[in-house]
Image 1: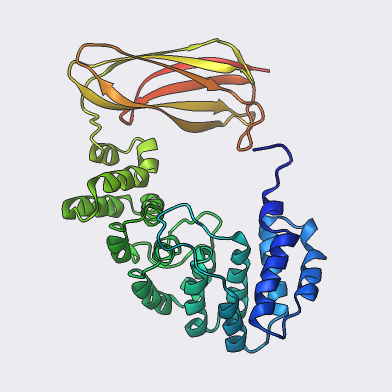
Image 2 (image 1 turned 90 degrees about the vertical axis):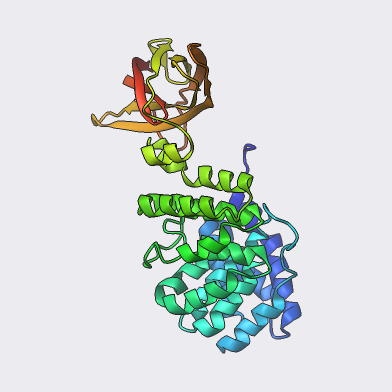
Length: 372
C-alpha cells in the first residue's frame, strides 16, 4: 500500500458526499444538497472510516422527511442503477451507499415490513449484511421469511446477502442470536450458485460454523458432495475454503475429507538457521519428508512466539500442498521473515520454537533464539 494512502479518505470524502447529495436532490425537491454536504463535512475530516459512514447516514436522515414511508420512498428513488447482474464476482458497489444501511437501521428498525424491502434494494448497490443483522436479532421470523424469497432472487448480490447476513461470526458485524444451524437449509440452495461471489460467502459462513458446530458443518459438506448439484471444481474450492480453519488446527476429519491421511508413517526432519536470528532478519527452514508409499501431504509450520509475560503466541503458516513419492525424500525449504513491525503482533527477543505439521500431525520441531 502506498505511503500516505488513506482508505477512509478514498471511500468517504467531499466528492462522494456531493455525489450522494446530488442523487437525493434529484429524487426529492425538498432536499438541499449544499446544506447536506456542509453539515457532513463540518465533522467528517476528524472521523475514522466507520464513524464517517455512520455520520453520513445520520445527517442524511436529518435532511429527509420524518414520515418513514416517505423517507424510504425517497431513498428508493435516489438509488442509481444496480451493480451489473451479469458479473459473478468482485463487484461490491460503491461504499458511499453503506451509509444507507445505517439510515435504514436507525429510522426503520421498528418497521421490518417497510425496511426489509429497502435493504434488498440497497444491497444490489452495496452489500447490506451489517444492516440486516439488527433486524435479524429483532425480527428473526420476518427476516427469515424475506431470506426464503431472496435466496432465489435474480441478482446475485441479493442471494449473497442471505448467506453473508446470517454468518455466525461475521467480522465487525453485530453478533446474531439465532441458532447457527437455522440458515443451513438456505445454504443448501446457495452452495450450488453459479457465482463465486455467493459461493465464497457460503464457504466463509461454513468456516464460521466450524468454530461452533464442526460436526454439523462437516455433515453438510458431505451431503453436498453426495448430491453433486454444484460443479465439481467449484464444490472442491468451496470445501477447501470452508475447511481452512479446521485444517490449520489439524482436524483429522477435515483433513480426511480433503484426502490427507494421518495414519501413514512419515519420517521427517526439520532444521532452522541461523540460530540465533535477529528481529527483522529471516529464518530458513530445511525440511525432509519420506514415506514408504505415495502420499498426498499438506505441509504447514507452526511458530511459537516468546512473550515477556511468560506465555507463548502461536501461528500456523501454510507451506506446501504436494505429493511424497515412495521412498524418495521430499526436500522443502522455506524462508520466513521475522518482521519487527508487523501490524498484528510484536516480536520479542527470547527462545522460540517452530513445529513441522504434516497432514495435521506434528512430526518434528526445532528451537531458535530471537535477538534484538
